[in-house]
Image (tube, rainbow, N blue to C red; front, side, top):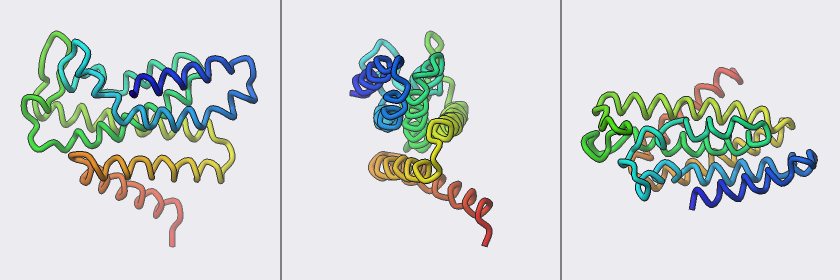
Length: 186
């Protein structure tokens, strides 16, 4: 499913490269489509010949691949935001052992403490990349705020229903509150 959504966004934006106005119009829907795809994209490692929680899929790497082409930046931004939410929830498993640890290809598990750092660092990097791209893609301030609210709503609904989602949601809410307080002092 996530690969299909990303494919639809790629084809849509790829076909509109020659029509910049149409590409700008479809960039935001493509970004939202890829946010939803990014929520489950890291678990694409399960049907592939990779260990669960592969470092290849549970990192910023898939989003960075889409940065190669400027027209695919909405895909990179949406994917990064979705990945960040998934990785943030994965930081809070019941126990960071065995199945829950991050695995490097051909090397195995990186261990419990390193897995926490890997997932948290990549969630933070994905959040920063996705936020930067959203900021660059959406020029109108009101539309930017509405887009950010939509991404927050998607993230809250996702984190509300997955294991590890509540602590991740609390961290995102705390960070958002802190940033708003700094930006809009009373």
